[in-house]
Length: 80
Image (cartoon, rainbow, N blue to C red; front, top):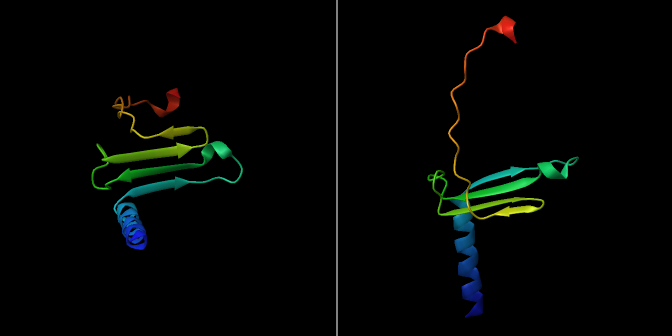
């Protein structure tokens, strides 16, 4: 009985990961650059059912509201 429960929970876990968008960033030299982001389901990234973000010292279970970017103001090349 326990074997079947373990097997089906493992299959469900693999299915959830297969339907998720997984963003993994790693760095050998800077610990701050390491991060893992899981968004489930991958076709609904604006309002996901499950969101997980990890970086050393920070764990988030909810996605931050997307901030609307201000339109870029065109500049002339010689004024920079």
